Each structure stands twice: as structure tokens, then as C-alpha cells.
Length: 69
Image (cartoon, rainbow, N blue to C red; front, side):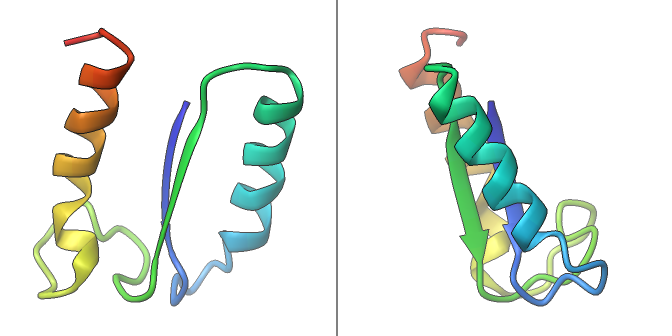
């Protein structure tokens, strides 16, 4: 599982995503978590001039590492 979230997400998803990561890790499933400092909710839909703008590159790298691309 690839998980990406922004710390400043208005819906406060960070605690949930950390729990989700821990559950997948405990189940010995492949999981990668990216917590970006800025990006807000829905950062994947529009460029916001933050490090979260590059989430697709991180995702692509993970897909390649998992041999899914």
C-alpha cells in the first residue's frame, strides 16, 4: 500500500494514516507512508507549490520498487 497525506490536511488524516501504516506493517504487507508538511486536503488534484506536488513521482518510484511498473 502506498499512503500519502499532508500534515495540514483539514480533515486531520495523519493519525489515521499512521495507524493504517502500522496495521499493514504488522501484517507484513508492503507499505510506504509519505507525510508531506504542506498540501492540504486533495493535494493530488492541483499543484500547490509544496513538496506534495511530487507525490506522483514518489508513487511511481514505489510502483517500480514493487515491480508493478
